[in-house]
Image 1 (cartoon, rainbow, N blue to C red):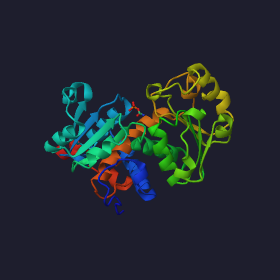
Image 2 (image 1 turned 180 degrees about the vertical axis):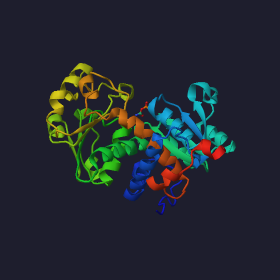
Image 3 (image 1 turned 90 degrees about the horizontal axis):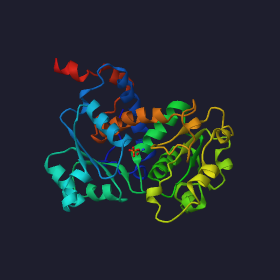
Image 4 (image 1 turned 45 degrees about the vertical axis):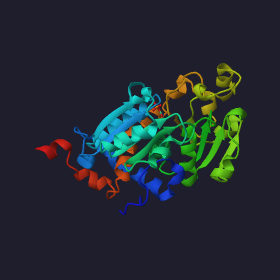
Length: 330
Ligand code: CP
């Protein structure tokens, strides 16, 4: 199949991708995931390339899954953290990026507290820049892995009712989900306290996106519920009464989940505040796909890295015939 990433050298946000490009990355995550069933999960698709993981904000899932994704494609990885790098001596982000480029790094995967930080370095370096979460702006690989997980479970995105619950105003995960799901034709009900809901969402994302502060309205007959983490660290003023009241009014519990469709699935990007935005009963229920999201994160990130190189699209059929890294070396 023809690759459609012409002129797309970086993954900065899902806002900038077409529906077809989003579909291609997601389609290609299927053969990548199939590789996980092998004993030797490593294939030589990115052998000889190097991926710099530059994480200037804490992360468990995104950092480790990008590292595993790169390693399963046989790329070399290197990690740069703010606390142990020359950022502590006042080095600028652009100088850090240019330093990694001078080492002939092929990819810079960046997590940064400032919205637009990946865009800034993408203008300065020739290597591929991948946004691993920038401030309150976007978290494109989370949006892609959430969409891939929904597609795996529901076999379609078009026409589904997806409820996104919580602190939407501070959520880069919500924004990337909104771009992907609205482009792929889902109906998205965004719900949270009024103080945590940004204005103008339907104007930006189209008429399939509705906004409400009534959780029962958002959840009713939903096919999918994506619960967001309450991000107390990003709230500069008191935007909700108390964590206890938030849990009572907006938390997803079993009683509320029962009003969604019987086969509704529950997503959460992690890390979870159990007992706040989601009860343990729901998080650990058979309707929860939270750990499958984690597994899918590796496949989607493998797909993103490979896709950005402009190589021919990987298919399930082709993946079956790929030699593993150890077979290549024999
Ligand atoms: N979902 C997510 O971004 O998790 P981490 O902060 O652990 O990477």
